[in-house]
Image (cartoon, rainbow, N blue to C red; front, side, top):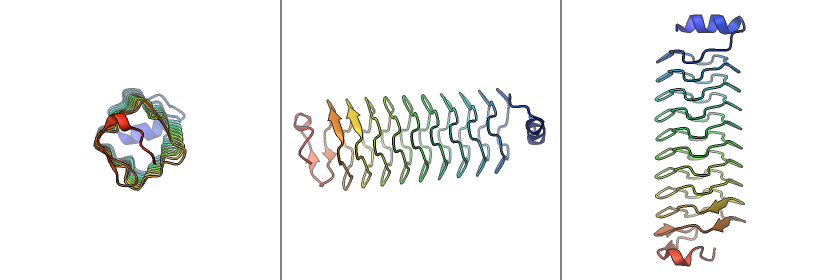
Length: 223
């Protein structure tokens, strides 16, 4: 579909655009809130600073898309493909990201407060300085992810995998880690106030004080 046709139909009140082909479309700054783009092919689309509040993007292909500084508050991205996408300073507050592929995505400075990010793939993702307060990351993969200086207050990380992740100076206050994999994770300088650990596994992990934990049986060590 041509961009002009999409915007014309949206302006007339239409909201159903499931499985539309918008590959490499230029949609920066557009307002498509409440649109249904389920299964849409939007690979490489430009959506910088777009208004996408409560948009349905379930199973959409957004690989290599640029959504930097876009507003996706309350959007539904269930099982969407966002790998290698640009989400710098994007607002994803209360978004549904369960089962979403965010591998190697750039989420630097993004707002993911209260987002549901369960069973998601965040391998190699850059979340430096992102705000994930209250988010649910249960069963998600964050292997090799960059969480440096991210805010993870009150996050739930049940059976999540943070192996080889960089979590230096991140804030894990009141977070819950239950059967979480944190082997070779770097927590140097991280904040662990009131954090809860339950049956976690760690090995060769760098603790906030710089101590390297080599024996998983000794976990959790004294903070």
